[in-house]
Length: 427
Image 1 (cartoon, rainbow, N blue to C red):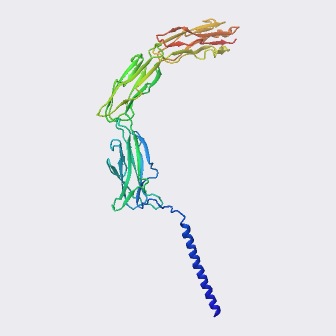
Image 2 (cartoon, helix red, strand yellow):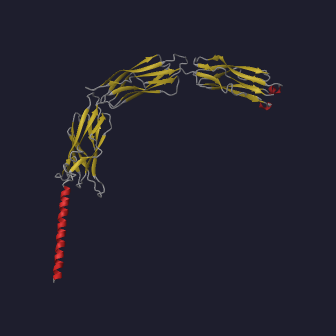
Image 3 (cartoon, rainbow, N blue to C red):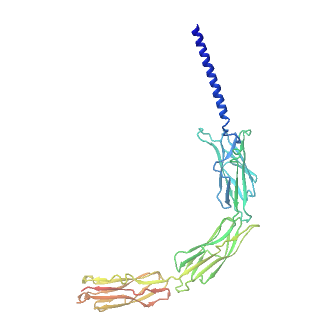
């Protein structure tokens, strides 16, 4: 019986110790937690909210010519129905004049704001954000120099499309709720291009000249072009689709005409040129502004087309003959660097060593060759006779272009100096 009493007393002591331990541990944790800050203490709470996407900047700097700015609206907690988000507009930017809003889910838009449907997208809960919709802010050109504008876009709220009693606050607390857009004013500018161009007379490629606006105007733009310089239309060049008075219809940005070079066959001033300038320009419509840019003129320089005559392989390739079986007609090609619209005749001289005309050779081309209009190659024909191979000494027949014998009305044809080649018969 005494032993039973001691056992009960021991169990009682153990229970007391356990209870004391629990109390001590509880007090320890309670005291320790007093020194630890609450990590969410002081943060705004918004259990039901709609927000702009995480990639949304607080500010955007754009111009009237900028591409649309895409913004995402997200509903982090799905309510298994479409939601209709409301955004508001504030600032100096005017809806419909400076900007518009587009979206596949756009319900309505006005000067004060827009309503956009965010679709419910069923998922397997693997997506962090399931329901979202993009919208675009489009920046408009107005051809009015009215200064820079600003726009503040605020996400006001979202309500259930099926159950309007579901109302989500705009923004995740104070963040992802609003952003600002600065819109730089862009003047309507008229220009001409290219500014400077240099061509060769009679070049095959025409020069396309563009008179253009940096963006489409809301009304017709009329302009007058003036020309200057010492090139003459019909002699030095031809215009294609050119007129001094041009109208760019509303919505269009460019008019194009071409300059085609001609060859006057005269060596002119090396600074021959044609200038084309915008002498006046205006835009229809009240209150619209048009600026003529710095690129307001074109200078078209034209260089003479010098046609140079050469003897192919001159002074580099002597025709070597040794067997009488090699007798016959030999061709020596004369080239002109470009075509001429008129005939060009060039003479040549023949000088010989141990050779006699009519005995050792015949000059079939008779001392000159002629380039017909459009032709760039002709051949000098020399016939080597069998008698030339019977000489005891080497026979040399030298053919040289005679630059003093040039006959043509094309003043731009020249003959390269020291143009000669030879036939050598090794006996």
